Image (tube, rainbow, N blue to C red; front, top):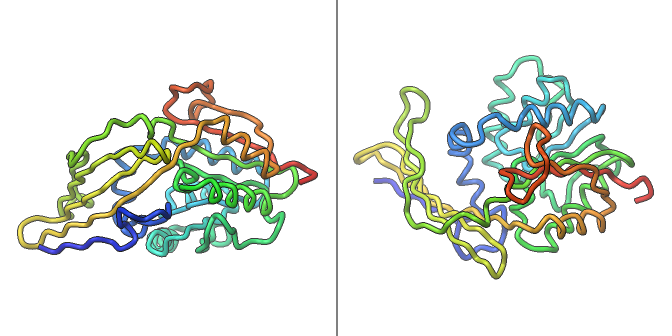
Length: 272
């Protein structure tokens, strides 16, 4: 049996990007069975309204990046994970008609590698900001977003509010399937821990691919931090971003504490 434990996914790690290189091989497989494409139309409309180049934070495997480009947006996806970007680049090479509309860059969202005022919009889909585990990390990221936005341009982010409410459990089989129609079997055994003192939700993932002697096990840990919305609004304001709207879903549902998803849009202050 092959067994590999990613060094970035060590349980004692304090950096939110740890674990994502190991996650890359399974990210699309898992997301097709969870969020799917139900958020894509919202971000396509957001990018269309921006009327200029859009930056996607934590673009990962290109799950959102490419659909935005197909709708005509000029989009740049930035991600720290080289493994995630490798999957995105493969997907982009296979796409047709996207030349000049989709670009990918490796970078840290806390220190975005772009000139001031470059983008007409910035998006942070699917809780990517919750991978920032410390106040100073979030403050740096929001300040960096404000810097690369043009004055008056918009920032859209999604948060997954139910993560802190997940019940703790240990070694539960949560997903079973195959890679493709004829590929090897895949099983996800998951454990969830809550660190209430630091506001962290910790997912220990164990993926088993294949069977018998050819079986391979991959283990890694992903951590998320969830702030109350009021605290997030204060941090946006400090970065020069004024909240515009708050929704409780992708179709513009009213915001509520019990919503499955929170979507917040903010505008870069013209004097910031």
